[in-house]
Length: 115
Ligand SMILES: [Zn+2]
Image (cartoon, rainbow, N blue to C red):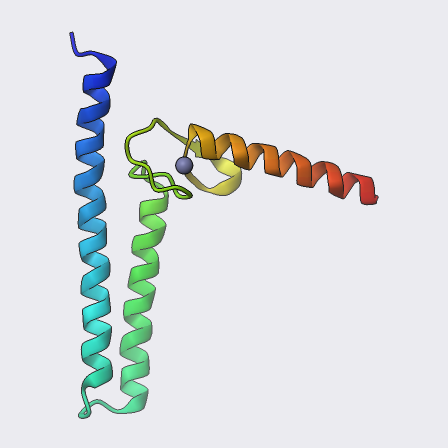
């Protein structure tokens, strides 16, 4: 039988592999954008289109990462259990999810006191 701590370590390794792949993809986007920016043979309008296309692809990548339990969106931990919070559209560790829920509750109370 696999212990909870062993499962946590295995999960951490898988998350780290996915996280490193994500970071690598981000670096590739940055390099492509730099290369386009430095290319004097590309017109301004074409650069703008190409860069906007890359930015759009990078935003999709960020959105995909947000909906998979790779790391806590706030603190970045990959070791702790992650919870999907529908209200915040992403995965968070226990500490961050508690803080967000508390913050949301306090904001709700302060908004209600204004009414
Ligand atoms: Zn966190």
